[in-house]
Amino acid sequence: MPVIAAVDRGEPTDRIVTEGRALADAFDTDLHVVHVLSRSEFVELERTSVEKSGETVDMDRIRDYATKVAKEAAQDGDTCVGLVGDAADQLAEYAEDHDASYLVVGGRRRSPVGKALFGSVTQEVLLSAPVPVVTVLDEED
Image 1 (cartoon, rainbow, N blue to C red):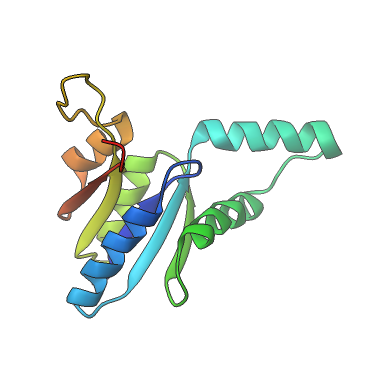
Image 2: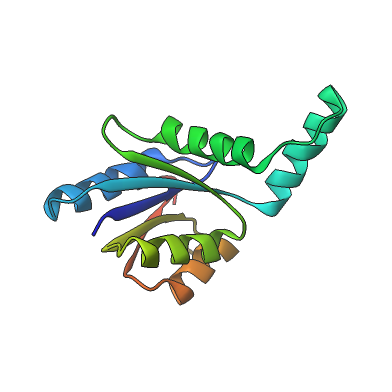
């Protein structure tokens, strides 16, 4: 029953992985660091590939790229996984398929008075995940 730490490219991931590692250690289980490449990111990579080489990118290379993003956030010994598609759906499916104990995601405060409103992916994960979700807020919040 691994703990899953969901990381995103361009977002602070240290706290997400640290919290995931703490949970994994507490429950003596593995940590899976997962990055889901969204459809818009896929389209951008595809466009860049076509512009540079004239060739489309195959799905294995896209998953390899997503796995690379996960590896950049992970620590030695963590399982790194790259997925492609809708982030909330892919994370829920991965958590269910691997009988995860927790899913750790990032979030941010959005209102000036400090009311926590999460990004759309985080909110969707909170509402649809088949396992308990731990949300780690950005440090500046």
